Length: 474
Image (cartoon, rainbow, N blue to C red; front, side, top):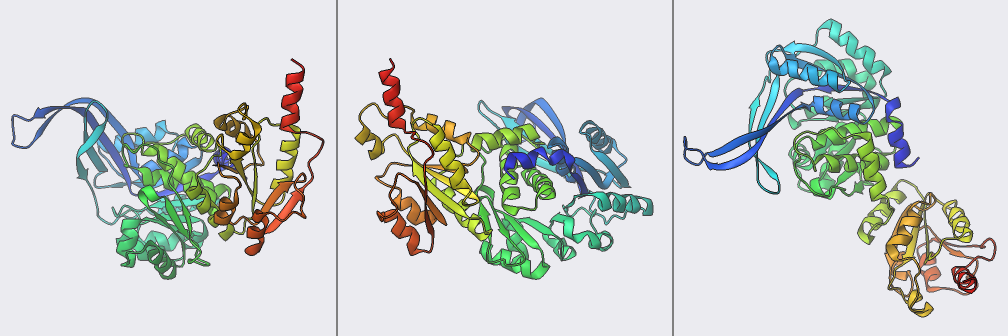
């Protein structure tokens, strides 16, 4: 199942979100200089006010925006901020189930704007941290929704919504519970399906500096799958069956404007993705894409399914660099996926190419196409008029072919160094290459136990003959 297919199934999934609900208020304005009323205080001319759901509310808002069916459980005060949260839930198509607390937790931020960007200047918090308890009626509503849900997300900001008592009630549903915890409450979450933490909190819990040691210790302590977010370095997943076989997925953020709520966006996307298909790698990739969109916006932001699809398509013009591809290959092998490698110039695509790529992909789970770059010796030997289609044009065409998973460009005489680095399980060549002629590529592949395959090309297609035919028909 590809990433787009997973996103398209989000509307079929039911998610319950339980946790600390907040209202995020943001005022954005121009900094006019120093305030005449106090030393070292700035004078901000307010220009825009943004009200949005925060905490568990932001998780729910992202699920709804991505198309999922979401029920939100938590505590909200009987005050104007509570009314704002109820209104925002109704507008976002979130089924809300609230009990009442002393006051609504609210985060108030002021951002100063200059010519290019806005920057957070201050945050003011209004909180009710007292332990909270659902009424018996609300507890029964929660259990009914959890029973029919595909996944349950717990968003713990240590404001009292998630207690040992409610966890005892939910424990029989542990295999579909994903938790974003605070360190102070970590012991509540033993045996859950997945616990997600950022690196700062993971280090605080494990009392270790190394992320690998943190992940392994948390798996041992909690008996859960562990996911640690690493800011600009992506995410690392530690499976409870074998935490030493961790998986790292790089971040896909382009321009970071505001990190507020990005973790909530990642939680929502993880929950929906794992509800569709419990493939951790796919879920992490989607969560990183969604969080990458969120940090490009000001304040908490609910990412839409269309934005996520467009980001995936944009990323998957399928071209990747060597560092990312090496990581992706290592991750695939840890998940027992077979990596197939082939190379070529693909100057003008013809049926021989497409049939060959289909046959190559059938040999494994992931097909890497090493594409001769415009400065490749292959094209220099063909004369000054090749390639006909430039590198980016060929990548655009090849990215539309379903069998191709990743494309990497090389300009060496051969892809020997790529093979040496990536260590594909299978290396494939077209039948025009004589198997008996031992290539250096073959020796490398066989040295680490890989396979070398040759696929007979269907028909008598060739780019050179097509070019000559076109020229002769002028």
